Image 1 (cartoon, rainbow, N blue to C red):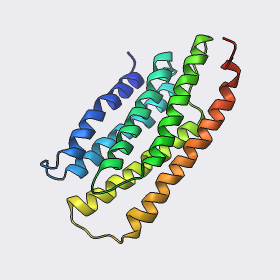
Image 2 (cartoon, helix red, strand yellow):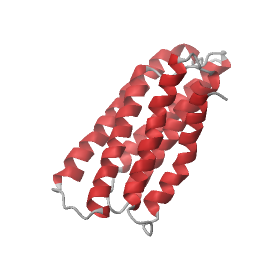
Image 3 (cartoon, one colour):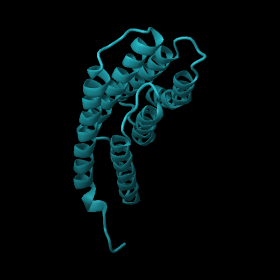
Image 4 (cartoon, rainbow, N blue to C red):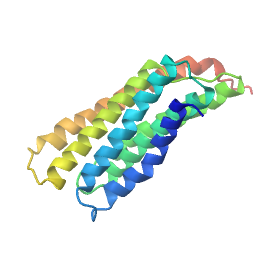
Length: 191
């Protein structure tokens, strides 16, 4: 297994560590540790792709596992935000994001039946990167306010972080529509 694929697997293994850090408030500075784990997992996403392209180590396994690892990481964090008492996110963006991910996964399966592995496009990568930055922003807010007890103006979680979540959702919709358009040839209602 090459280094980019190992980094992708590391991202998958960091997901339960993130969950432990964000939920176990008996751990001192647990939001800070969750932020560090999420940021490290997000960094592996950037790093594995750069290494794979630069060193010619792009594999079908990586094309499959990398976006799957991204989906699970992002959906895990957003799902936590829907139920987290310290920062409650609306379930609507999460539903839109999950629906897009199911659609894309289904389209990938259809393309795979035709022998085609569909890699993530630029809009999907932009959506993932922006959403990860948004999640880091929420984690930073949780760390500052609840681990360190710093008061921040109420508009920060309500307006700024809320706007970032909705921008991520809009990027999700755009990338999903473009993905559907690009994979339309693999959809055959007669099969």
